[in-house]
Image (tube, rainbow, N blue to C red; front, top):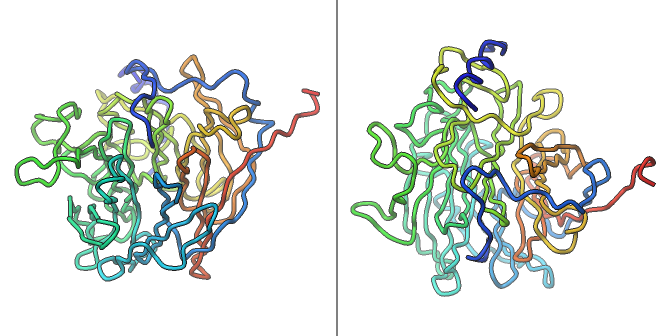
Length: 407
């Protein structure tokens, strides 16, 4: 968005208080691989789900190269599921002695598997630490639970907006989302403060150590060498990025960012568009949230899709772009997400002209918490029935329902 466009937008708005190294590349300004022409229109596409496992308050999904899925449970356990043998009876990892779940948004929040898992045997997890509630990123050896803390963000003041989703990008670097610190209205003004990790997505190289850090900052991170700015920052101006994912076709980044109360939003940027500022807490979705937090010279990146919070949902659950083979003729290039309260299946497609098409393609089981893919790119989701202290793993399929006008 140009500065002139931002000024016009501010004047109109109403103020309110993961596998191959050979994926094709697009130019830095290109938002995403365009949707193939042969897929069905969104108004003729429907999702279906089949529950394949029962879990205890699951929070994230990550595939292993042997075909298993790792699923984190809020209390601190990691379970393994294989489509041929089902859910393993015992956790493959138990971190309950160090994980705090004192608030609904605290707990074991995310897991990511590096490309070198075959020989390293390690995974990366994000959780709220029992000793001080810090959002903690750790490297864990799966066979024996040996841990190395990579970084920790203090987060004791408020229990919400921890973020905690993490994912390896096409570039091999690890990305971690952290919320703005909690409460409401961004009391720390963290979203627009580049001297904190709060309200950001970080990008780090966990394959090496640099100086006192057990990781390195990639040299092409957008704020390396910028005074008063954390060099780990990749994207900023976020409220609570839950969650984000990369399109395996082009490496572009999709982010579901939870709104304050008026708008839930989905953002989409190209693989090389580091430094994008998504506007919180100047902006919430398409509208000004707090004019005193706005910089008229800033270049805010607008969401590609938004919906009304309170009437159409309450908390966006960021999803995934479908790149599997089983339903490629129906849904290739379709980003699928949901909402924790409404259970709506939202779909967004990136068009060849840089625009986006969106629609509603059905419903998911209630209280969706995360989406994931298996090693073949087929979609799964987990949901959390907090009243019963349980949830489920669900396989996602697609159907074509031709409209009357298309027959």
